[in-house]
Length: 197
Image 1 (cartoon, rainbow, N blue to C red):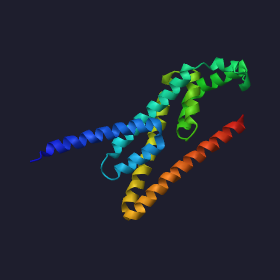
Image 2 (image 1 turned 120 degrees about the vertical axis):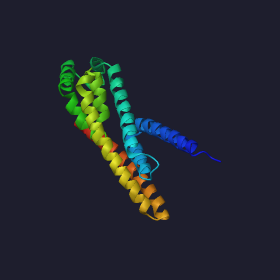
Image 3 (image 1 turned 180 degrees about the vertical axis):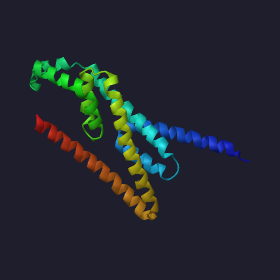
Image 4 (image 1 turned 180 degrees about the horizontal axis):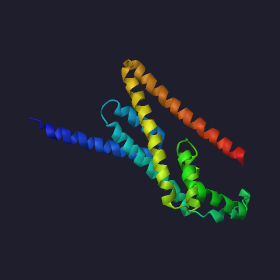
C-alpha cells in the first residue's frame, strides 16, 4: 500500500525544483519565464506567491550580475577608445549624473523592457554604492514581477477555459507573439539608442 505522506513529500520536492528552475530561467530570460511560470501557477501545480518570489530572486540576481559586470570595468578607460569620441570631462559629467540619480534611473529603467541593463552596467562603471540604488531596484522589481505574475496567472486561467484544440493554438500564438514583441522592442530600443548618439 502506498503511503500518502511519501506522495506529499515527492510533490513538495518537485515544487522546490520547479521554483529553482524558475529562478534560473528568470536569470536567463526574465519576462517570458515569469509569464509562463505564472500561467503554470494558474493550473494549481505551483503557488503564485512562490512564482513571484522565485522570479523576483532570479531577476534580482541577474540585475546584480549586470551591475558587477559594469563594476569590473573602468569608466575612465572608455576615453582610450577613440572611436567612441568621449572626452574626459564628458565621462566625469556622466559619472556625476549617475552618482546623483542612480536610484531614480534604476527605478524607471526597471519598469521598462530594455533600459535596465545599460543603466545597471553604467551604475557599476560609476561605482555607485549598493546602499544608494538597491532599495529602489527591489521596489521596482516587486512592481514589475508582480505585474507579470498577475498577467501570466490570468492568461493561464483564460487558457484553461478554452477548448483543448484552441488551447494549443492560443498557447503557440502567445509564445510567438511574446517572442516577436520582444525582438521588436529590442530592435526599437537599439535604433533609438543609435539615433540619440
